[in-house]
Amino acid sequence: MVSRIVVTGAESTGKSTLAEALAAHFGEPCVAEYVREFWDAHEGKITADDLGTIARMQMETEDAAAKRAKRVLFCDTDLLTNVLWADLLYGGKCPDWVRTEADTRCQGYGLYLLCDTDIPFAPDPQRSFPDPEGREMCRQLWRQTLIARDLPFVELKGDLGAREQRAIDAVKRVLALTE
Image 1 (cartoon, rainbow, N blue to C red):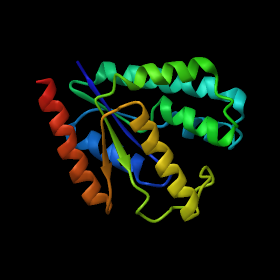
Image 2: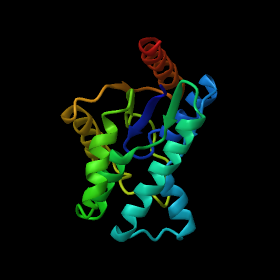
Image 3: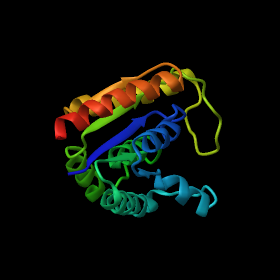
């Protein structure tokens, strides 16, 4: 059984860097955030009508990577994040099947690693909330989403090195439970 670990949180909190570092540390696959690939392919034009396609591709790439994993899979995002962004950016115009699938799939993850906003914001055309208030709002939204669903999570604060060490320790605990 492969444990799926999701690195989550507000934008510009080191999620992609951390997910890749964890995958390298454990010698396991990492699933990238598909929406970034979609964004690049469509020159930054994403509409509410694209949300189902983005979710479907995220699931497909994650499930394919899980088949390659031996013990653990690191996910740079999940469908809960897709739903949160749909609510924030598209007024809740997320397809019902994506919401349902997000609520089902999240129950199967071994751990969420919630990245704090205590590192500097790195500008990127894909990002929407660069100000401290917006970042804090997103941090709280992601945190409350995990709590409301009673999902296992560890909060990661500090520089990237501290986050990575705390994440490695948390993943080791999850893996020890599955042995």
